[in-house]
Image (cartoon, rainbow, N blue to C red; front, side, top):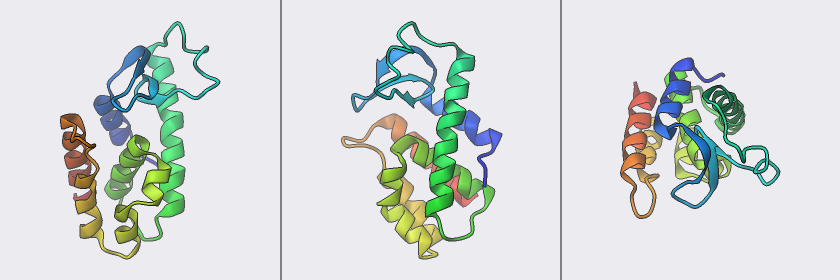
Length: 143
């Protein structure tokens, strides 16, 4: 499956645009719409980026999240379920999806239990922005 344009806009909205390198709430160097800067990219982004460049980075990053969801999820998904999982995976990383109770419940066919797991991924201490995002991802997943 592929992520919809709707979820691309959702992710961009929740990540927000930053044209210069910044540190996310967990201290990771980031730019654009939540692109985590890899070791070899810092020099590339030293002068900043445009919205168009940030959108291309986001599309590439979403592609990686799509691959992870397609690989790890073993049960049928609706487009909305897939989109919510792509947004979640983009934000927490494929490694966290792989070891999550959310994925375990989903692959057991417990769609409701999986939906409720979104609300557990809100940071420690809880971050209001993540609480809002997870609530919206859950709504997308169950719709």
